Length: 602
Picture (tube, rainbow, N blue to C red):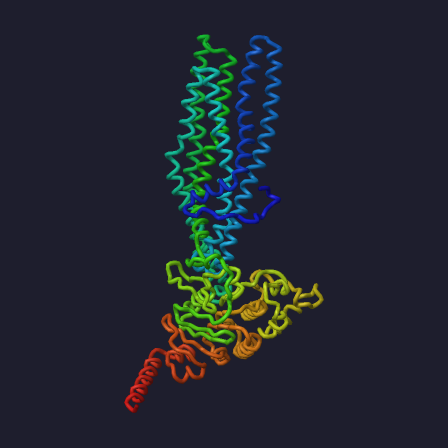
């Protein structure tokens, strides 16, 4: 896989049983790139390992005054220099390619999972954690994949050096063959502590990122209540904790680096001292001593790869674990339909868990006393289990469980608009250019959502587009618009999509009563032949619905029109009219008395 071939047509099915298994799967998926990097790394390291031989031959040729051997040594050094240069360039090229393609594979997997889970993702994983996984963690995982082939090349080079020196000069070669493995493994006792410190640093950094993300998202509210200084103080404290953890972790890695410098130096001193004695005794030549000395000195370079791979694995293992945890999240726990057959996605929408029924082609309003309960119910109606460990009984559409439909079919059939919709940056035309049935023009959707004032504002802002609001750019998340304007543009986008079932969670909570009434009428008129479910508690919306369902304590307990429920259901009246607990208790008591009197009369 080359960088120019990205993105992957299919990033594959990852092994998400654990962080190390996920890393192993990534390496195995890029076996071709790893082999290329390994071969170029071997050329580079073995070229370096051959330098002492050429140097030793040259020194001995000078001592012996042998011009032919000196020329041979010069030619050998030139060839080794070319091998080192070519190997180094190509090793860097292939290693970076492995890094980028591994990171791209992980990002594609995360993007695919995000598209599969939708808004449920941030209910199961904090938004800051998702950002950290898709940025910093992806980089660390790519680093390990890149370092793996370099480490393998360095390890093979060390084995070749030890074996070669043992054959070339057994007396000194044995010392080197014993000492090099000790140097390579000397840092192992320090790694667990370094890994723990790195994990602490990563955990604190994730919390700081989450705090920063939440602060930016709620900045307008913070300014309204004057809470900027409070949250700034919290972030400063969190960032200081990250700094302290980073320094604490860096000290351990500095110790590991020091060990990697001191021990090779100690081995070099031992080899020189012992080799000098052997040379004085006439057991080895000066050229052989120079060759062994140079080889030991050059082992420092491949030994650095042992430190790098230890550091890369220590940082990437928790990152891979977090990535695997996100990728392990599933849309459903129900098996897909037998044989993968295409099944019809039309008819009544029914939730067996709450007993909520939304008849096909009708405008159904749902009233919940708790906004959080309403949000989780909206997710369920869209085919998403709201919480891990919760009841995953699937919602039925026309008697077919949404869990058993292919994801594309389920998303086409049921569209859920969250209470806090996100507007992506781009022009208004781009915003409304969404997969749709084609039956609802953008102009009709904007009219139904009462977006005239939004279009006027965009037209005034589009100085360089000739006053065309459809060509006006909307800033990131629609921050240049008011909350009500963002809600109505998001509603228009949902209406353009024209799904079989449209679920709206508080679609008019940020607009005034007059606009809310017109929006309700426009949505009802535009979707008269479609199934629409609105979770709301506004009387203006509820009065436009064909039927209203009251969900109390997780169960649908009453069904009727808005006016019928106001007259007969105290719990409904308490939510819609905001009655106090005392008023509700009195109303319930009166209702019970009336029911008892009617029973006695009967």
